[in-house]
Image (tube, rainbow, N blue to C red; front, side, top):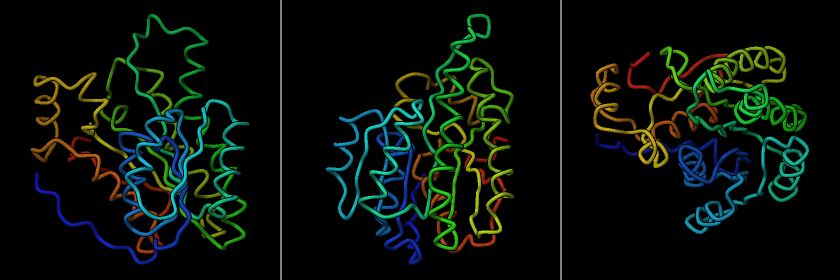
Length: 253
């Protein structure tokens, strides 16, 4: 697949953007994409080494705060640090998640709760942490990361797919609650994106061929295309878009 030249969004220059799970994979592509647009990017992640390596690649006003998002108090502290250096968030990208596989027979109550904390709970509290600043600014954009997994009735990770299905409910209710303040809330729905983690853990020739057959388009999906959808939803070009799903899955759903 030939990667077309990225669109330049003038409305993103100087914009303050917070990204969760920004050290690797889709999150790292999102951080780099905003930095290339001239935005001020603050991201949080547990991976200090990966985060520092990413920062070394970037130019401009970008910072990182180490944070385990399962700890809501730590999330609030990390966001406060980002805001102290960059200003209040004008864009929030709730990207962080883990799609670890698990058999439904082996799931304990403790594991179930941990998966929800890893994949869903922090999204709400991140929104809560930035919403007042967006209200004061007269608007903002919140982008939650969904998943093709539950849309396609994917098996083998029920705690993950349940959390990701719930993201869409969170998006729609918060779009209603925040919409009068001109805060837009949307969900980006990636397909099977060819990150290094996916390639290392789960991509086989047979599995990839099966997914390509399911898609309308014949190419594996690079994470850069998810980042470009996020850019659009963060920009003023999407000023009339809220409470909706924006698919980047090659037509597999």
